[in-house]
Structures are given as structure tokens and as C-alpha cells.
Image 1 (cartoon, rainbow, N blue to C red):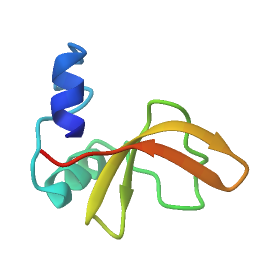
Image 2: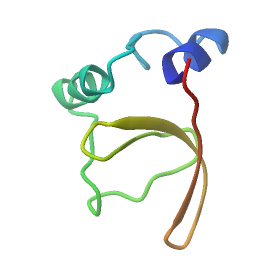
Image 3: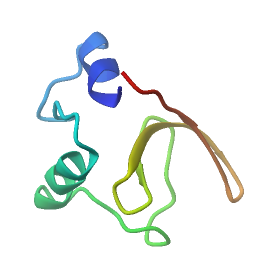
Image 4: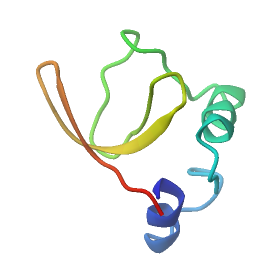
Length: 75
């Protein structure tokens, strides 16, 4: 879903790669040095966030205190 959204928004694959398997997307960000572990970074709007060690992914819509609001889906 995240890859589909990025493609629809004409975001290049050098920013958001095309991936269907969440651990592959997570690895891509880690390999590029763009992955931040929980607690090491406060997410911002439009960030990509991985949940459960790579079991799900979403797009950050907003952050309010310790609440993270995301846009997620399954294709």
C-alpha cells in the first residue's frame, strides 16, 4: 500500500522503493542508512513507519505526544 501511494503521488523509487514484503522495505531503508529505531527518532508527517519488527508499514499522518496516527492499507 505504501509503495502504491508513493507511485500514485509520483514519488521516485529512490525515496520510497516498490516493495510488497514489509521486511524487504525495512531492509532497503536500513541499507540506505535511513531507518531509525523506535525511541531514537520522533516520526514526522509523511514518514514511513514500520511496526512489529517488520510485520506492517504505514505513512505517518500526524503525531500528538505519544500517539502516532498513520495511514495504512492492504492491497
